Image (cartoon, rainbow, N blue to C red; front, side, top):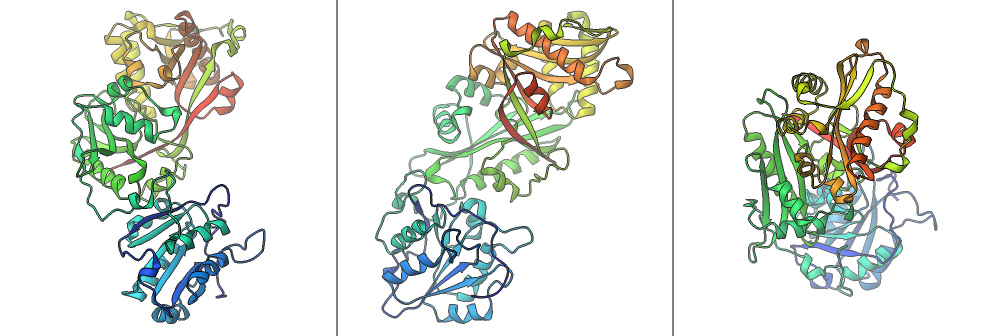
Length: 524
């Protein structure tokens, strides 16, 4: 055993369910290994030093070495560490080997050299010797696709069963499959450039099918709402990647530009969605769409900020919490340390059954406060209040939403809170199917159910010196008036979108969390 720092924090040992082995690519055409190995050819197996297996206390990669040796006796199993990397001992073995099998078990701990970088050193030392990378974690999260290794095999973990399945696949004794159930032969693809094309929007069917294929059931959409969200002339620009032979769409990227404020000079560019059909993932399609979309957004005059997710129209508010794409974007320079605005702070969508709302508790309104629907006479006051508050709090796109309703004469959908006749709070309400532009920009209330109404763009003044009540009191009374307005329209549930903080308070009032996102943006 080579002394040194463990190569990995506790990772994905797997061991649950059927082992899954995917040959991601084999440009060297070395699988099965019997194609390139003869009697006496030395195979070097390099594996990371990890926490000993809980059950046996042994190196978890020993079963891999034994399984390989059962098929080809000339296996040399040598561990490596993150601290020491490739040492002179390793170099000697690499120079004597016919080929190298290099195991990557997971991403590095803080401050460690990644195992992928160590693999690149091994390959550089080995020059023309074939290197087979065996990844025991998602290769996209490990950054292996960018490293351009010619042969990559992905496992579901490094339990003994995974190791034995990998050995069998390398020697051609079993057909590995991917997590999508696609056969190995369909997953091994020749190197390809994936040029994005601008989507013309004429046929929404393949994009609709791709959307519902890629996203969890919670975010499925019907064809018409999706079409309405995507087809926005003037400020929507979407891209697709097609298979060169059949023209099938296998990748899609949605982008929008939205005015930041009333001035109409600054724009935010939204990278709203990147989705790739599962059999074609980890081929560089998403990366090609991402890079192309960013180039196009940066060329638009006035765009000074980029965000992941979208404001209006709303596909998703950001990257859903727990999605594997978090690490993918983090590797591309997006900060998610939650230490400041746009750096991955949690925002949540909430759902309430109106029958659970503590209605009677708010029958008495504190002296000086009035909550009501807006009227035409409130137009200028609402405009001034929203302009000032949204600029101060960086609520991108909110001003347009208020003004759209006002210009449509839908003042009943604007709920105001007034403290001694001065506006101190406002919110918008909407229901699906009543003609509101909000319902078409925010699809999820209508998707959840026809009895769901929405409350959005909740804005409460920070000018506490001029207010006789606390912000919490005003928030509760404002919500109470919004819920009453929706209940009067026959709604039985209420949906709030993109709320920052206040989890305990919302839960105490009967709300249930529907979705959580990372809010991520950056200046350019």
